Image 1: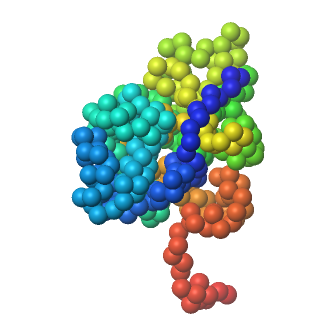
Image 2: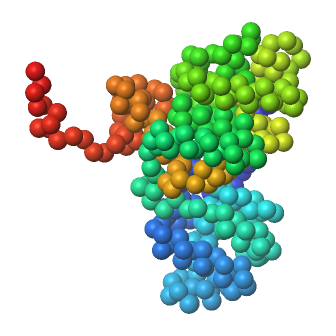
Image 3: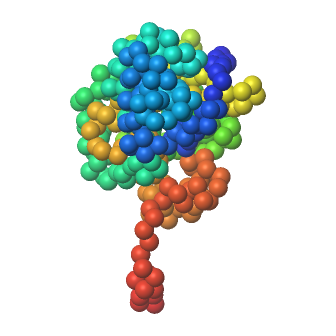
Length: 337
């Protein structure tokens, strides 16, 4: 298996349970700003790439030059990581002249940017059965790659796996050599975000139908086809999901040497586009994970079981995904026998 390429930079970020970038730069700039603060940072970035100096912008807003520089670099890095800026990479955001030379690409990225401004907004809505039916229907009718995107949507809805983990899955994780589905599979240690293997279940008929439909389309297109007659003609070690061009989703490592931090910007962007086409407010990869956790809980799964499926070891972190409201004690004990 080819090694995941390394992307080095001077910033320290971490990946949350949904695979989304959160954390702070080494400059200490807080990332989870409120809406007004984010809008202010966007305005400052536009002023700087429009030609104003850091000093001029700092004077207008009554803050230090250092504070302006930190906010702008933090926002530019977010855009680069979460949306993508044509012509600029993570290292490029540190240089004001580079930012100005990519002014139009940054403005285009800002048009696509939907900042996650608080934990509540990151959590989003819990999907109902009607929401799920509508989401699948709209993805199927609106996506330029409907078979793959419906399958990707079902992967989140039925496994609660992180987008990065889904990008790492291989055909052999879904299919046996004889072409049958591995209903009780495993997220391999090298695919899991925490590098610990855990159960992976393909126990939903709708999800299996969607993935099968997508894989059949891949075979017809000749993407990831194997050299032996196994796994329905697909290479067992090829990625389960590919880009529109039939290539693996690129995964890069970042952070200091020895840190196990990885990012798959392309699959995050793919999921954002899926959610945008669905058109339901508050829907994100994290809200889908919360939906999975809640449905498991309502079916009687213990917190340890939910954590095992989602790859969360701490009970506190599992509880954060579950509904906060509980029925009054009097109602739960009424007519107990």
